Length: 486
Ligand code: 5AD
Ligand code: SF4
Image (cartoon, rainbow, N blue to C red):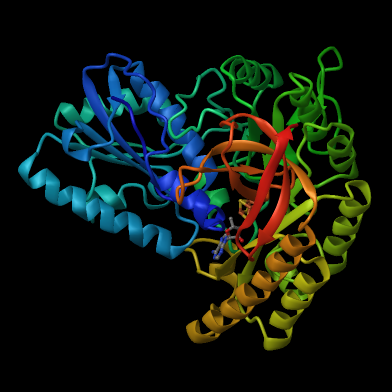
């Protein structure tokens, strides 16, 4: 039996129906590959980690492992971890301690930590804390069969080498927690931006793009397996480039060169039946060409997640974001002009180093200006070795951070309600993703703007495109009725 345990990021925590969908038995369980050994794989953090876990499962299935949902029957337990905020690490540490207890009764159990925490803490997890047998960073997954063998031979095993080339492009992911409709495709890895609060450039290394051929092959294979939606994933998808320098100069004139907009267009042209989404964009890199390409193709969804982090220019500069409040608002205007019915979301951090009450109010006023459909909001969490940790004092008291976060969340809730209310009585094409957890008689799907709609099942099923009319809403949920196939 193959299965997958997952925890959700704050990004996923916006819609309760979706959470329940993921937490329940909605996990499609791929057939056994006939492996003799059992792997229990748990993922934390961003979508990139979930996507990486599918690569890990693929690599280990070739080594005779089937994944299991039951950690008790596992020979190997791997946690794919996140370091983005301290809380994320605390949760993983607690989980590792639990597995350590299991190991007392089952000493042959191999426990490994993958992903960002592995890269950040390296041998500390092996030597000082003695919590694990394997530590493997995000670019070391091809080495996992060897690392497991080393442990079985009685040694501890570590590989935290970061690569400038690894994109796992030749590895066909095992779709672990898939609903059979939406899949994530990693198009690039790493991040060169060095936002001062962010640990990612240290844990995931330098930016590198995957070849367009391998991406298109993966899309085609998903289309032939009846998938209906692909999300192109990268820490900063706008930096995708192929056969091109950062400045846009072509490297080999005899080969095709592509930027992100070109790639997205190629993906959209694979099939008009498949929806295309992407995550995440950086305001300094998101081009008009990307917006124009989105507007040109009906099957590229009209939704952009554009993290702003703060509404104050001075703080944005301290965050090393390389744009001002005005630049951000100008990008939003450009997007709204080019794609009039666009759905927008953002990330916001409260209580970054030296943030004053006035600066916090500027974040709120930016939110008022844009009125995002949703937002992912965080208290600043100082991360070791980041630029901010080295240069600035984490001087906003915890209580103030919490109060400001609450204010931001409350404001966002009024904006979500405002945006949802605007949709009342209107008709939207929705791709059905599954059955609502609250009622077997209800389905849920998303509009092109990434808004979830719940409606009566009638004759419809997962994977259908239907037109729904919105009948009622709260800040978190939209309910409607299906009017017919789209
Ligand atoms: N503290 C709080 N939030 C953070 N993020 C990244 N690093 C930190 C940190 N140290 C948030 C940013 C980013 C999102 C993925 O996580 O908003 O866009
Ligand atoms: Fe971190 Fe900034 Fe890169 Fe996003 S763009 S991963 S916030 S460094």
